[in-house]
Length: 449
Image (tube, rainbow, N blue to C red; front, top):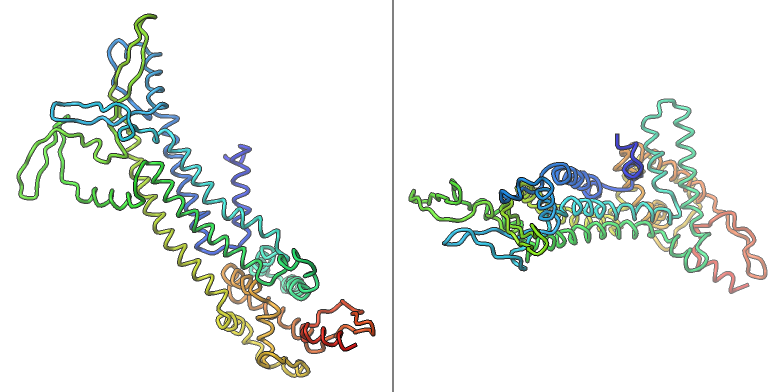
């Protein structure tokens, strides 16, 4: 139904496309999927009541109540221009008039505030999706095609798709060094560029949820961000109250019943249900009148539950996001963990390619060629890609792809093709990347010519 509406249809189609990029984890889903769905439900719930129901009901005088146009005008005026809290004192009803402490202005903006929050939770992932265009390798396409291997039943097609995918991954990582000419290419082709962008996205998610906690407090006019905890404790400590009009009978812990004149409707100051509104009427040209009406905002009964629930969820989401962000940082910078990950995926190879690799000698690191495959060939971006592939496509399909790339790596390194150095100290062949020869060694050879 919504797909026929241009704006909503485009929004949903864009969101579905984002969900298919696969470059996210479960912590990201909590932000741009689960929280977005929750806020979308809040928008529909509060917006339907406010725009299609009776968001405010006021008790008007008889002469005004009999005139339909005046009645509708007063209700709209009180809704749009705000009200103030209606309280009781020892003598009865008390109207404190408009001031900073008594005025209530937020309730008419609740649906729009929830909609703004929804966009804020979608924004970091939209930015991450856009930043993927800056990468030298299309990670989303690799993960998507790896995922397609799961449903491919034809063996020949499966083999062809796997071969094409392995060749694509190998070529991009193999020739990455050739394009690092100049400052900008050195940045965009850096082996940790994608990892840096993804960690920045994690911090954007974290910053957004913290900012949302502060915005909710400001929007509801709370002085502290701990207002949700205080409201929950106040609600749990609330005594059993039975109200008759404006008189409430409160049963204490000792069984003694006392009566006092207070308003249970305004038990929570920031979510008043019983309010007052001042409006101007002009019965005649020379006799303008200012009248005060008692109003009720039934939607605030729902608003207080929604905002308290949202506050609890934002607190939980903040903690989970911190855990997820720290986990990803350690996952990427821990070289031993990265080696264990690759070695576990390559364990099926054993030593069957060692004989073909016998001519290759690593001068700076341990003789195991897998070390260079992890740290020099793949780099942090390759590790990040493998994490996405393993989480979205499973270990088996990830193992198929990485083993194919590893075989290509072995073939290139078994018989490294060194660029010819001329008498002028220039390379004559840039068709192959010689990962087995350090750039420092080639530079020394140039200087000796």
